[in-house]
Length: 404
Image (cartoon, rainbow, N blue to C red; front, side):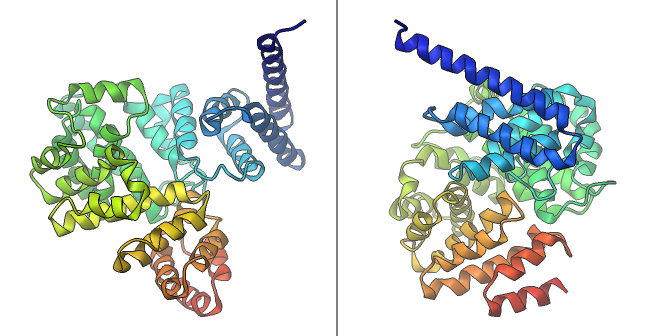
C-alpha cells in the first residue's frame, strides 16, 4: 500500500508533468491568436491547481509562473498572469511576481535592460513590478565607486523617459524612479545618504525633480523590505541597524527632511502588526513630531495597506473609516487608486471601492481618483475612458472634462 507521502509525491509528479505539457502547448500555439487566450487559461488553471494546497499560494505562483519564460515571450506570460487572477480571484496583488519576471528576463539579456523595461505591460499589470525587477535584476549584484556611478547617471536619467514603443504615464515614470532607488542602494554598498543624493542628481538631468521622493523611497525600502540574499547582505553592512526602538534616531541622523521622512515611513515593516489597526497606525506616524514626516508616513502606510486591501476592499474601507476623521478620505481614495496602480484596466473596481465608503466620505474618494487620473493614465487611453465611464454621473462628467 502506498504511503501518504508516496501518494503526494506521485500527485506532485503528475502536476509537474501537466505543467510541462501545458508549457509545451503554450509555445506551440502561441503564434495563433485565436488559440492563445485558451492556452493562457489552460496554463493558469494548471498553475492554480498545482498551488491550491500551498499555505502561501502567492509564493507558489512566484516560483512557477517565471518558468514559462523558457517557452514564451514575456507578453504571453503576462496573459497567463491575467488568466490566473481571473481563476484565483483572491490573488490581486501580483507586484512581487512582476518583480520576479523582470529579474528572470533580464538575466537572459542584461545588456538590453532598457529595451526590456519597455516591454512592461501597457496596463501596468502588477503595479509595474516588472520594471522594478528589470532594473534591480540588472544591477543588484554590483557595488561601484562614485566615479563609476557618475558615468552611468546619464543612462539612468534616460531609462525612465519616452522611447520608441514606450509611452510611459507619470505613474510608469514614478515606478521607474522608485526602482532606480532600489538599485542605488546596491550600487553605493548601502550608503543610503549617498544613494538618495544620486536620486536627485539623476532626476535633475531631465527636470524630473518631482520623482525624487519616489526614488528616495526605493533607497530605504531596499533595506526595510529585503527579498533576496543580497538584500539581507546589504543590511549586514549597515554600521547601525534600525529596530523598532531605534527607528526614529536612525532616521533622524540623515541630513534632509526628505531623507528622514522617507526613511521613517519605509520603516513600517518593523511595526507590521501595529499597523493592522487605526490606533496602531496613528501611534506609529505620530511618534515623529515633525508634521511633514507624519504626512509622508500616513501616505506610505495608507498605500501599503491599500496594496494588501485590494483583495478585501470592504475590510480596508472599514479600517480607513476608523482613522482620524481628516485622514479618512485620503485613506479610502488611496485604496481605490490602488486598483488602477495594480492594473490600469480596473477603473470599475476603483469606482466600486469608493462606493463602499459611507456617504460622507464618497466625495473625497471620487475626488481623489480624479486628482490622480492624469498621473496614472495616459491621455486618450482606453483605461482613462473606462474609468470615466465607471464613475457616478456627476464625477463621470468631471472626468470627461479633465480628459479633454
